[in-house]
Amino acid sequence: MTRHPAVFTAFCCLALMSAAARAQEPAGSVSGIVSGRVLEIGDLTWTEIDALSRDSTLFLLAVGMLEEHGPHLPIASDQIGVEHETAEVALRLSRALPGWSVVLMPTVPYGSAGANHVGGRPVHPGTYGVRQATLRALVADIGGQIAQNRFRWIFVMSGHAAPTHGIALNEACDFISEAFGVTMANVTALFRADSSMQRRGADMASRHFSRSDLASFGRDVHAGVAETSGLLAIRPDLVRPVYRTLPSLAARTFEEMRAIAQQPGWQGYFSAPARATAPFGRDIEEWWIAGMTDVILRSVRGESMAGRPRYPGDLARDPRAPLVEEVLAHEREFERKLEQWLADREESE
Image (cartoon, rainbow, N blue to C red; front, side, top):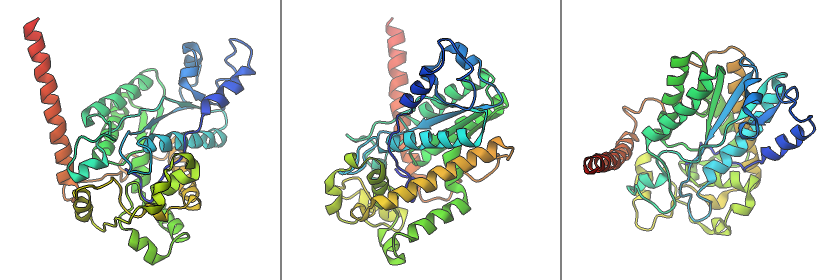
């Protein structure tokens, strides 16, 4: 499920860049590693990590999802996008923060709740996620270990927009920030809720499509114009040609989205993928990367993000609230089965 108007980009292999840079350092040298670098944590030794400044090192954690994206986009679209976005943000941060180190954590490839839930189908051959509680615990575990090693800055970037997913990331970040006195923030949630940044996105979209076109697309939230454009811009090899012939499935409200998704044979997308273009995708990508970079820079330069609006916001009166409860009910039933199995196994031993 995309970040409106869409923010999907390709995987950028930063490991080769890091390895090439480090290959020029003498064996065992730390000096070149600790300043002004974008680093993949898995390539470092523990002593190299321990040598990093606690005050001028920031960690980026990307979280993706394996989720159906229609008959035209790969199920790893969310992961592909967020990995590329994170790599590009890391490069910009390293240029904007001389003397800092930017450490990339391995991507978490699983998220919570696929778009198939909108149609009342919790199990789908194209969606492989984890429970909300599992995601929250996993992200908190990772952030907690970074914090307990006395690093102060941890930023999460997400490629998936299901409400249960965003809530899990927000709660994990809040817990680590409050429990350990560090800054851990869900940058995606802040970006999506920033009205000025979203106006820029709307202005950008209006440069590519007329007002009537944009209205005809409906809620372009999943595998539609924007998301397909993003992949056309950065991984056109993964976009199946069938996108050009897919009929428009425009929904103007969440209730209309549910009605479309509940129809027999729904192929797992909304909006009008056939109208997607690579130039639109490139502009979406620049808008997203620049906005994410800005949020992180403002944070490390002293601007507090605590209390700022975050996606998904208060769902108490949101039309998506029943869907969230459906997702959680399905997860609770799975957890009940797991707990019962564990209890039965313990009794039998």
